[in-house]
Amino acid sequence: MLENDIRLSVKTALEEDLGYQDNAAVSGRDKANSDITAQLIPADRYAQATLITREEGVFCGKAWAEQVFNQLGGEVALHWHVDDGDLVVPNQLLCELSGPARAILTGERTAMNFIQTLSGVATHTKHYIDKIASTHTKLLDTRKTIPGLRTAQKYAVTCGGGKNHRIGLFDAFLIKENHIMACGSISKAISAARELEPNKPVEVEVESIQELKQALEARSDIVMLDNFDVTMMLEAVELNNQCYAQLGDTQSGNKTKLEVSGDVTLETIANYAKTGVDYISVGALTKHVRALDLSLRLKNT
Image (tube, rainbow, N blue to C red; front, side, top):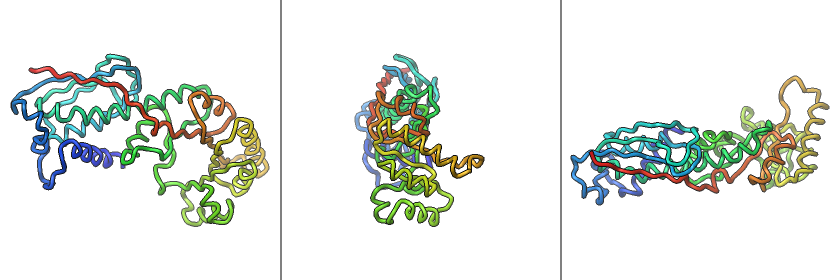
């Protein structure tokens, strides 16, 4: 899925910059001719360029940059000095480029847009990971992603040390208030999910301890504690432990997992993790994105 999405998202991004081509058979080099500013440079002019970062962060986005120049004809060579997931510091050399000057300049912004956005996600994720490093709690992303960049941003989260929640609406159940109301109850919703897709995980969102008890009794795989305060989280963890012990199922490993969601910030996440919950999901990882500051400089050869 990711490899296919990289090709499609880069194609769309280049079309935004170069105009949409009616003829799908138009070559990468010919498509690049739509860059009228680059046409000021002689076609046979070759150049070298360097890409650096202006600030500290976590690098991510190699495959997207490579795909940009592949779709522009494949004549630009990229020599990387970093890998996805690497920590970088200000003025660090990330990549050296060489090839036709026109192609380098045409692909520059599109490639950097992908790298700076995905590196921003990876860096933001790392900030959260650092806050809970001393706990066993795992950090999850959400579906609050930039449209069209779902798999890209979720990949960037893993580069920053986080884990992926469900990819979309197709790979796991997340039963929320309106689903429960439509189904009749938490137990009925879970039963319906088990019958429909018995091999897919079932998660239920609850807003109170009473709803948590219902979800535990119905054996939900995961329970999302929505906007619980720390005291309620501690109570939820204890209740889950008691329920697990009472079921006499302690050898199976099928203990319900608890996930915290809502009002999670860099200031609050450590206290939430210390309650003993299994997961904390944070929408800000992918929707509050600040791009990493990059710079590309061209030199003639």
